[in-house]
Length: 109
Length: 112
Image (cartoon, rainbow over all chains, first blue to last red):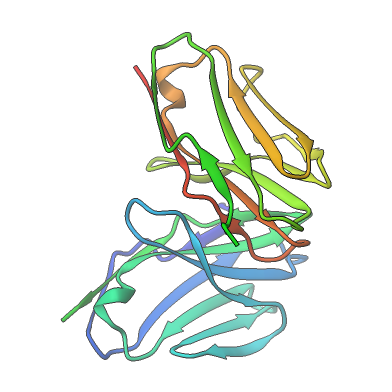
């Protein structure tokens, strides 16, 4: 089992819809969780961090964490074509981040 | 703030040659990470430093890879000798504490 697993994707949604990206992790002691966005040919960019159970909202983005289920998700409301990218889930454990393989999102106009 | 600066952006080299990748982290960030990204394996952590000291190098593929951080503003990743399977994008990232990272633009390495 991989340490961090994400929906294999690709995920396609129409413009204006909600995009839902999911991630599970294997180590229960993990404490910090992050979402990065990576455009094709570019480097990953941090967009959300979450440390405690519940929801965290930042603009059109909402991160959700459920430590009991070892599950973290990212919701993108009112999706825009500019949101089309690969989204990477990362989990910090023992001082280092482990990344999932990413889910590629395409938002169609 | 100029962000994390990596050089070179692209490197094409012949098998067997030495390759040195460079990174300047964000001033004040006490953690520095080297990652490698390929389509097959995704983002893999190679090594990371805290306050210039290597903490975990378990991701370094083999003895051909080495990394140094002589001071808080500079780090190198060296591959000697290089092999075609080393072809990948190498990212340097830094962070203040164990928080989200800021990545550099990456070095695309091609070994022919």
